[in-house]
Length: 135
Image (cartoon, rainbow, N blue to C red; front, side, top):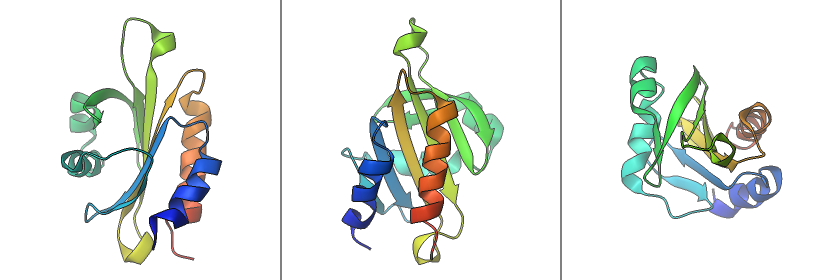
């Protein structure tokens, strides 16, 4: 599958996300709107294996820590925690068990205010179900 097959629809459907990333359990990037740090992919996958550890360590994307506020697989999401809440950035990850090529796949977005999790997380989940699950 070419990166364009996911990247182009992601640009349209997730236009309010500041970043997007789609990858599989092998660490293969399926599409991304930024230069991915490969060492950050495995820890993102491991978020789903232990709720307490996910909350304790948060999500790291491009070196930025996002505190996990909700751990409800197949979704995990949270925000950066700075001094000014209105300047925080959200991050959400969705896991698709039987994704492209029969592999577990992940979709991740980050988003800035005024975009909030209540709106962005369902958009990510819908996109993942439509584009990462085999047809």
